[in-house]
View 1: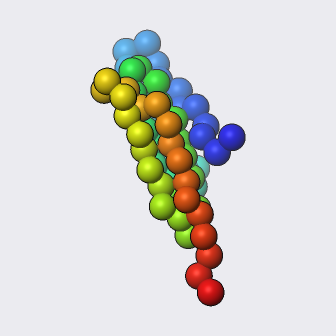
View 2: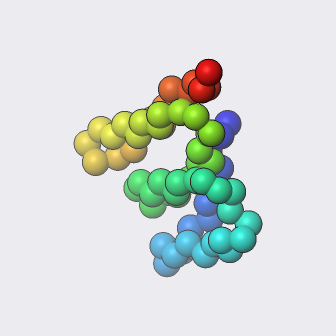
View 3: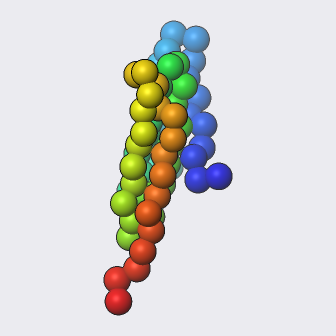
Length: 65
């Protein structure tokens, strides 16, 4: 899986060291969960939601010719 869990403490805080995070990436937070997703070099990334919750992250990848 591309998505990695990000630890959320009991108070709801996230502690990240930016030097250990891949670039570029996004962090998606939904319903007390957090996941980190490294973005591919060439792609469209779509985040789908339903009733205020993230339900799917989808990539449409390609390469320049």
